[in-house]
Every structure is written in structure tokens, then in C-alpha cells.
Image (cartoon, rainbow, N blue to C red; front, side, top):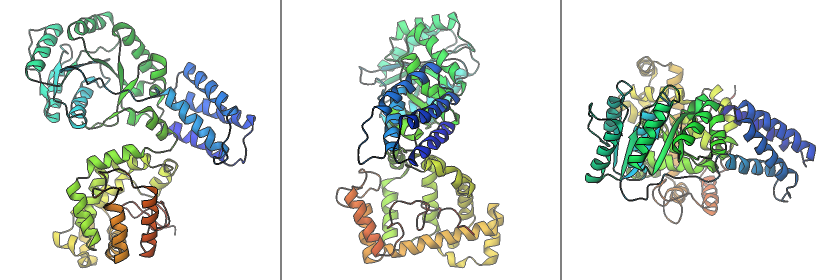
Length: 501
């Protein structure tokens, strides 16, 4: 998401970084490029004008701190401006009400409204521990109710039994009664959409709103429609009063104009974003974290959250014990690959790490991408149980058989085995006294990650420094600071891009 805007802004700031001090003309030139980048990203013109005027006043009159480079000061000002453009602070859903909290889903047909209702049910159950019921009020679209019922089954949420004789208002009344009597915390009402905005749809929404008195009216808008999504939001807001916006297909929107314009133009906060087709691909929208992603500052909070969800504590501790004892086989290697996939794949992971956005294209060009990760998984699955544990058994004929079974080449198999051997050597060093101390600092005890690698917060600066010193003493890679693709770097199970010939 926001790929085009990221590239443009990174180019602007890299140019600024080459100058020792910034003049007013430097700032003007940079902001001209930022303005063009925002317009190319399909951001609404009034929003761009307001943003640039605000940024220029702050950048030209800013007192540059001695410890901060001038270009970094401008980046900070742009970051704060983007954050304000995206809505300022995160706006969570209103759930702290007398149950059931009623959420009314509105939007045009084809915007992903019914799918988003299913995703929201799963999101509320997993993230907020709420008991959720879904109710379809869409009597016009064929199979709308069947689709919602299937999504409710996947999300393990409640569903209102269907009826062909009731109107949307009557269904709403029955849904309210059922949710109250059955003790549901949240009731999600999926309303009918139209191909375009018309008075009949708005009248139906007003009638449903009068009966349900919803705590949230969420407009579901397709981010790929750009400024049309903003126009749609304005129309719905004027007709029924929208409390929040859900932007779908944000993962496929390289420009991001709708997301950047929506809050400023409509006055309605973006509360949730759809970032994929799977049922769990719905995220709470945080302007500060999104601005960080756009400016390649990463989103470490989201990374840790994803890691905490993807990595089970028992599995993490089992892996830590095997690493500390120097045991590491292809089954462990496969476990790391699958954990990486659960966290959104290599592309999603890199987008959350600060400073790596600009390297993503080079990394992909070197062949290090999600397709490579899937090939590695296929290669390991083509091995026998004995071969996964005793990699030394892999002679030429076995490697040829594995390559044929996984649909890869012998060179791919050789490369994977080499990466495994490099990691196995590192694990053996972790089994030494100094290596064990480094592992202890990283995985256990004290106030760092506290036994659960992803469960107790990030390590302190002192712990990181201590860990690096211990890793250097034991000869382990990584002692020279964070460099995921440099010497001794490599993400777990990947080994970094191929060396230059």
C-alpha cells in the first residue's frame, strides 16, 4: 500500500539528506515534489493545498535541533502533517456500552460490505473477546444472506435465522431482541447496497437507524475507487450520519489517495482497513503508525503484535530450548518459515521494519521474496522424515529426487541446504557458554522479552547492547548491530540475498 507515494517521498528526503544545511529554497523545492507526489497519489486538491501550506510554515520557521540533521527535522514535520491528514489520533470502535453494541454496516454494492462484516466479527472476537451476532438485512442482492451465513460459520459467530416474509426493519427488531436475549456483546447489521447512491437506499437506512439506534454506523468504501470513495462517504454522511469508515482493498492500492483524503474531506475518521482477502485481514487504523509506514519509519508495534499472534508461547520456548542446546534440524527450519508466513509473509514483514522500505525492490530483484519462501517450504516437505533430521543423508540422487518432488531445481535444494547449515552452525555457537548467555539475554529473564520472545515487550537499549557484546564474544553473527541483509544477517530461515558474484 502507498508504494508510489513511498518511493516519491523517499527520493525527496534522500536529496535533502545530501545537504548540510537547508535553505528556504531547498524546503520549497522539496515541498513542490511532495505536492506532486500527493497529487499523483490521487489525494484531493484542497487537502494537498492545506497540507503543503501547513508544512511549509513549520519547516521554514523551525528551529533545527543540534542533534538532528535538517532533513530529519523536515521528515518529522511531514510525518506530523501526514498524521494530522490521516485523522490525528486513532479512533477505536465504541464498544463500551450496554450490550449489545449495535454496528450498522453501510455502503455501495461491491465495496466489500458483507465480507467486511464477517471480518469484523472475527476481529471483535479475537482482539476484543466479544460475543458477536451477524444479521443480514439485504433482501435485494441474490445470495447475500447465504454469503453472510458462510462467513459467520468461518468466524464462529452467531447468525440471525433468515426469513423471506420480513422487511429490513422487522428483521432489525428481531435481531435486536435475539442479541439481547442470547447475551451477545455486539450485533452487526449488514444492510443492502446499490450500484449507485439513490434515495430508496438512504430511506431504508434511515428507517433501520431509527429502530436500531446504532452505536456505530460504519461506511465500507473501496479504496481503489480513489476520490469516488470520498464522494460516496460525503453522500452517506449527509444522509444518515457516518461515525467511521472502513477502507477495503488498501493492500492493493498503490496510490492511497482515498485513505489520505477521507478523514480531512468528510470529517469522519477511518477506523478499520481491509488488507487482504482472508477473514483475519482486517486491521485497526492508526494514523501515527500509517504515517510511519508511508515515510519508511516502519511499524514495529504492528510487527510485535503480529508476532505475538503468530507465535505460540509453547512453540517459542521449545525452539529456544533446542537452539540453546545446539539442536536444529529441517523441521525447526520449516517451523520458522511457517511462522514468517503467518506474520504476513516477507513483503509484509519488511514493510514494518524501519528503513527497509527502499530496499524491498532490490531484495525482490535478488530473488528473496514470498515465492522463494514457498519454494523452500515445498523442498522441505519433499524430504523424508529421516532426511529432515539427518541432512547429511542428502546425496546427489536424493537432492535430485527432492527437486523433482517439489517442482524446483537441484540448485534451489543446494541453496536451502547451505542456508540450513549456516544456521545450524550458528545454533551450535549458541550452545556454548557465551552463546547461551546471549540467548538468555534475548529470550529470558529480567525486564526484556521475559521468557516469551514476543509476550513481554521489546528489550531495553542496555539489553540489546549486552546481547550484541555477548554475540561478538561467542563469534555469532549479528554482533555488529541490526543489519538484516548484511554479513551474518539474514532473516530466520532465509539467509539473506545471494552473494554478489
